[in-house]
Image: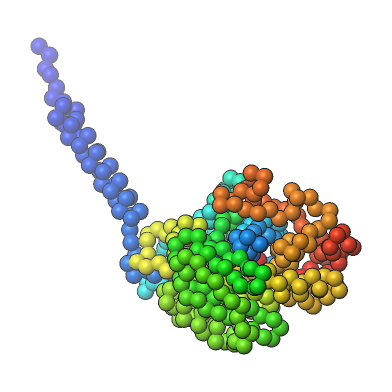
Length: 429
């Protein structure tokens, strides 16, 4: 008679079931832990962000696509960029997103991942080094991702600095916690995360001038928290504040009897009301003061929160206890005074006057009918509809060369006159 050996418990039916229950339990525990980690909240982490959306209004009041006539000269050389340094210069879009900076505040060291998407756009510059920058197919949605951003309130060290002036550095004048990211070349540290981009999205409002110079402003979405009509002619400035915009309003041209300092203080107050700390609001206005209040006319407005979330969605993991995002919109207006000044300057080759309008010369000339004679309709600026498409059914934002000469920027007079060769005008885009 053959003796039957006793099977190990785990090979019996009961043991087999217990084994599977244990495995399933461990798997469930791991999955639950992963889900909890993904939904984790750093309750003592605060994130504040500010930035600008710069656009140009066409004759119908809506933002038109445009491209600056000069390369960027306001960023330090250590800032990283998509493709080549001049890649962005050929991108036509309705919105040029300028200098968003993201501040972090934490009482202890923490590490987070950050991802930003730009609807119908592309991220063009950033710092510190990002782990991934994706253009997206046909410029439908560009993204930038930092996988491991370490927030270190006790970080000691110097931030990168180059000789020469740059608006970039003013944003450091806050009490935010320093951050750093690791790269193959070593750690990169800064007071914030920085990025820029271009998009073919439409704005949340329109602003149309009538023959008398009155500005008809229409809200195209949620309430606009604040609008300000600004104008500068030489040393004379004026502005007209109109508060929140729910539907539509009409503004008369401002009296040119104002002071820029007064407007800066008023704008800083609005930004603090939107949730920025006073030093952040001061840093934002200091960064853009010379640009926002330069020669010309423009509508300055606070971008609605819903529009920011839709066009520029932000994801931070683990989630901060608080996120504040305050963006200022700038809609450039081609008023009769601006059109006359530019037309006269082009006719007389007045480089000093043209210099004042810098990067906006191309859309200004387009609006007043000054088109380069050798450019076809296909190559020229194309209006953008609500779907981000141009009149030919294509995505409107695309690299497009604009007329330049070997000696610099090239502007053409009316009716195919000889080009005016100018040194490349310094612009910020």
